[in-house]
Length: 399
Image 1 (cartoon, rainbow, N blue to C red):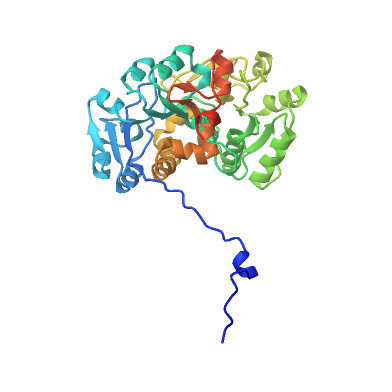
Image 2 (image 1 turned 180 degrees about the vertical axis):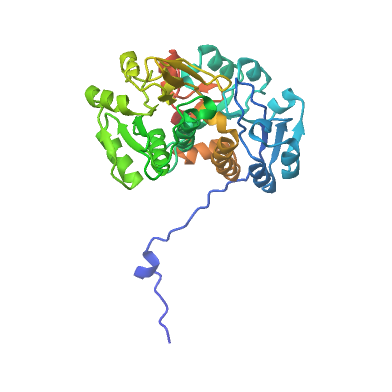
C-alpha cells in the first residue's frame, strides 16, 4: 500500500511549470493587385497558383483586369483561381493590402486608402522626398520586399532576381553573338575541335555566380574578377570546381578583356557602381565582342555604358556591342513573376496566420527589416539618412 505524500514533501514543494498559450486570431486578408504601369515593367506579384492558395485559405484577391498579361497570365487564369477581376483601378487600390512589383507613383498613392498595408519594392536610389511625405499623409504601413531577410540572414527577393539576371545575361550574350542579331556568329558551346568562347565576369556575387554557372554549363572558358577573396572563394565552392579567379588587377583585367568574347559587369557600390572598365580598355577589346552591363541600374561599371531599353537594348561603341538594360528580369517576366510570387505567398499566409502585420513584425525580425513605414511613421534609418528625414525605431513602436 502506497504511503500518502506529506503536504510538506519535496515533491509537493517543487515549482510547477505552466505553459501559457499566446492566442493568435487568424485574419482574413483582402489583397489588391493593380496593373504595373512603370516603363517596360511586365511582371506581376502573384501567379494564379498563388492566388488559388490564398483563396483556399479564406482570403480575397482583387486583381486589376489584364494585370498579368505581360507575364502570360490572362484574366481567365486568375478568375478560375478564385480572384475577383476589376477594371476599376481605384477599386483595386482601395483594398486594405496592396501588392506591387514597382513602388507606387504619387498618383497611385492618392488612390490608396489611409492605414493600408503596401508591399512592393522601394528602389531607394530612384525615390524622392515627396514619395515618403505622401505615404506619411496616408498613414500607410509599407514593406520593401528587397529588404526582407530570411532565417539565414539573406535577402531572398534580391537573391532570386539576381539569379535570374545572372543566368539571363549569358542567354542574352549568346543571342547577341548569333548571326540572327548581326553578331560575330559565335556559339556558346563546347563543340569538339572548336575553341570555346572566353567570358570575363566582373563581380563574384549572386549575379556573377549564376552567370559563371550558366557559362560553364554551355562550355565557355570563364574568368571571374572581384576584390573580395572571400567572395571568389565562395563562388568556387558553390560552383564545385576550380576556375580562373583574380582580384581587380588592371594588367590581368586588360589582358582578359583583350581575349574575351563576352564581358559581364555585375558589381555593386554603396551609391554607384565603380567604373572598372575604362574606355581605353573597351577600345582594346575584340571587334564584335559583347559587353553586358548588369550594373547599369547603379550607373554601370563600363565607362562606355549608356542606359538602353528592352525595345532598343544594344548599341555599338569601339566595335563592342553594349547591352545596358536596367531591368533585365522583366525580359523574362513569367519566370520573374513566379519567382516573386514564391516569396510573397508564404509571407502573406504567415501574416494572416499571425493575425495581422503587427504580430508578424513583432515575432519575425527578418520581416521587420523590410518595414520602412509604420502607420505613417518612417522606421528605416537608411532612408532617413538618405533623404534627411526624421525616423523612429520600429522596436519602440511595435512591442
